[in-house]
Image (cartoon, rainbow, N blue to C red; front, side, top):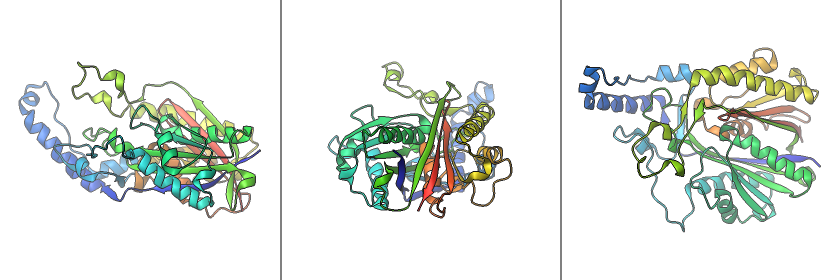
Length: 372
């Protein structure tokens, strides 16, 4: 029994922060910090914070802007993190709210009502709370049946969720599933760190998977999925309830997103390239059989390298679409934004590959075939 992707949805926050706006805010923060710590800097016990620049950001990442839910808080040099209004327990959580908006788009695209969905998976890098599950809240807000649960495999959460849903459809335990990726990355990014303050943006994506015989129109058959993990500390976020003891409430850098970018670049690229090559070989696919590569949107240089490695040549126009310049890194949602926005032009029998990779290390790939 085949599973198929029949609908996708992308919720994009209305507010954007350009590189120029971000740099102006960060540099004002750096000047404030340097002035407040001038004595320590002069004594050599503290290091002055260097300015950032739009040119540096583009060269390092390929990012030109990012969407965020709260722009004012991020750009306030005295604050430098988003300000989300507290919500009562009776109100929808922020993650559930944006996840529902993306899910509604996916359902509409597929012509499916929420009541026909058997499972909801909320797969994201950071959950708003430990419990009750955000997925169960989304299930209630949408009015879906069956069951729901959260899962976290950092930037690979979407592909891991797709394989999980696909396996359940193949086994016959469900007919339809929504895999939802509400990524509020602005809440766990350290905006005061020059090396990473530009990396992330906010978004929510949703993917509806159905038993293929239930699809009402054009869709993508899931031909094959493959997942792999390998432990690494090079991308890490230590935030969690066990870290919140009474003597650990001070401002700690390790409680936000951290990475050793050079090691990640050196170690992840061969891991991902080998993973994709092995997956394709096992499916009897050659590079020329691929019409599209939808890669995780973390860094343009990384994607360009993987594209060349997988295809054995420079990717042609549209073969490996990037949305990084407009959305920045949106963790697990990145490859799904690329898929949602750059897949409808494919024709009958065209084959593509969705791939995500990130902290863990984790890598997930999904081979799909267009059915019109």
